Image (cartoon, rainbow, N blue to C red; front, side):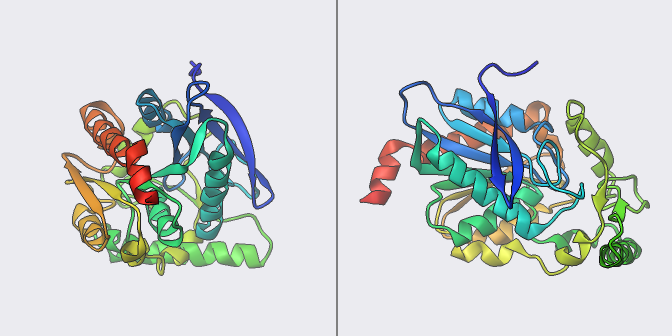
Length: 305
């Protein structure tokens, strides 16, 4: 059932339409806005509505968007993850939120999960106009996740990545591999929690496809959002899963320690547990509490002063 509190909106990024949901503030209000983006191969229907609904109930406007090449957004070929393009999509979403009716453009917060959390860390490091950010099970160092799946898996992924690059050079369709799969299979995430965890959050996401162009694995070898941590000026909240085998908690804590102002909330469970059930309740309550504190009007007045 569609939430009556949200409206479908579209804005442009890189010449392509970006599909988004907007949860407006009460008429006449001047409210903060939380911009939410998903993780690797994610779409907004994969439980981002659950977080946005809770933040909206806490008094925030929310904007939830799909990256180019995924979900309801434009872009061809489909299922291509591009770090630069996705961060351009974040910038376009922020620009749209700033001009939305009823939004206080000085109180924009970002919320990113997994791969999207890595984007948020880098976006915040480059900008001085973000009031706060939540990094939910954030991927801050892709190379820190490869050891759990073994050298053979890394080699197979790398070969698949070069095969996809060759496809593009030959103007062929992307070489797609699963985003998640059982242990031992050729998938980006094949630790035991990956497939059941991801499948659990996409039950109401018909646009989601378990396919990704393999070339991104080559880019991920050099992409390390944790390097940007010390340059972030706004307060951050990191939510980590103590049993997370995809974005390990110890790696995230090290990145948080390099930030100027960061809190860390640890939850029992793995990477996908905090999207559902009790772990979701614990996560969303901590995140809403953090956002209320950081986006309060008096906090903005203090920053401006």
